[in-house]
Image (cartoon, rainbow, N blue to C red; front, side):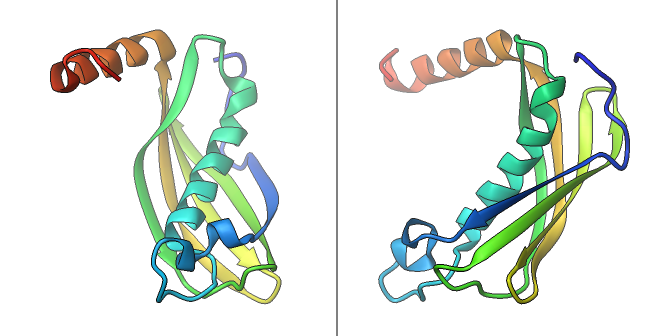
Length: 138
């Protein structure tokens, strides 16, 4: 890691909800609102974005635990604002509090723990696992 991460550091980002993010994309009878899988993806990537400036070239940040409550629906076309705040660090593990708000109300809250890992070691492990199940084909 390049610099020291501190509790209280945070990042916010705003995202416009598009049809590709809607629950109806995953199942035709679902409504045209932000899907939980899409929301979780943006919560996780916001945390990763917060860590990115602190990582060395050979490092990656991966989620190792996620706990999220999706509190309210957000229609396609609305914006959401995601906030990820570092609660604490423990060596290479970083604990985040995450929240999301649409134009009207809080829509999500929870926690995302990320671990900073060596990129090459991780990729070797993925390749080794893939070769065990696919005969080396990816």
